[in-house]
Image (tube, rainbow, N blue to C red):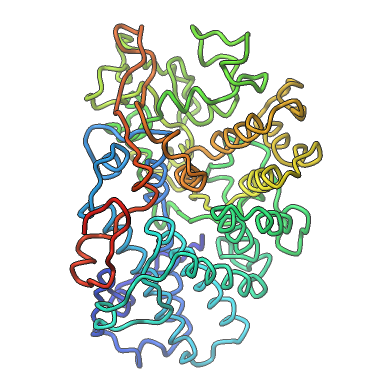
Length: 535
């Protein structure tokens, strides 16, 4: 992301401040004085970037899925996963509020940018396209969470905010698709500043938007632009090293289509402080991988552990998919710190270290696993308390390959050539060498191939905030988000898997969130609420 995104927002906050849809029309800084310079207007663009995404959003989204569990208390997301959500949940309200604050910023900019004197036409076209992308991204989050939502593309008044009704999700999605088609012809394939929204970002977003609708033909159409029509829509390729892809030293590499930027001199993010091993100076653990995730990683032969006769359950982490050790810390893991020193992390019960499993209410990992992916040793060396300066990737080329593979399969077009440019490439990059892992598995049934593609997606994109949305679009909530979650085999003196929450997923309710209760109180036109929730 752009380096100057952390400019002082004190002036801009006065201009665009709001509280959910309850927006006051009074500002301390008048429009007449604010819109006098290009520099002022760019403050608003930078603010919109900052409101679009971030590390906190990524880890909240990841916690909604089935890859990890949040420990130590019954926070809102854990309540959602355990079937205990209601309309008063703070997480429902904060996501709603944050998205509409960002949308207000975008609308305010689009309504006033023509007042800025001396702004070059090309520059204005690019900036307005960036803002339209951000607004579409925020609308996309909202409609995926809440379904039908209040929809407007101008800065509405306080009175209007109390009367607006919800627009059908399909209409919001049609608007998003149209916006992306229009701006991708305006945005540059290679922006002049790193981290700016590009033509490729608009194409990748369009691909994902159609993926979430299971519109396979359109997924193929747009993914093909990034795979086979380079450099028209940008030039992208897989970064050679899966682990270091996420390091700060490799920011803006050729695999990254769009990321959310951090910089040690400007700002950093601290979520890893409560996700990595406590023996390495981390804080009380807040989120940890679960056994169900560890079990889906392939063996080195490219097989599920249940189908590989060479798999040894007494040594469960040996001869596994190389991406496992790039993503998850397990018992016996070789942790390399910021100075290059190795530490063997022991997490099993009774191992006598700060990381050993002590129970489901302990301050260390309640699963016996820690998170490795996104930990950047260089950030740890520069900053304190595991603050990170590496960027958060929003769209990357590997995701495009996986979307293309899934769409081709679901369209009945999966083939050796599609396999070779998608999943085979990802496995080669990961470090697989066995022919059984790299050859096209033409003997698999349709159900087996679908499971392989979905599992490959889970493994490659783990801890990138996408798993929940995949489960929801597949309508597989009962399969993945219902039933017990487990930790490692450390219970009963290392003889049984740790039993954690008994998660619940209600098919008639949990594919959507509740409209926040306070919003319905302020505006009765937001009713009726989504199915399964009271009003």
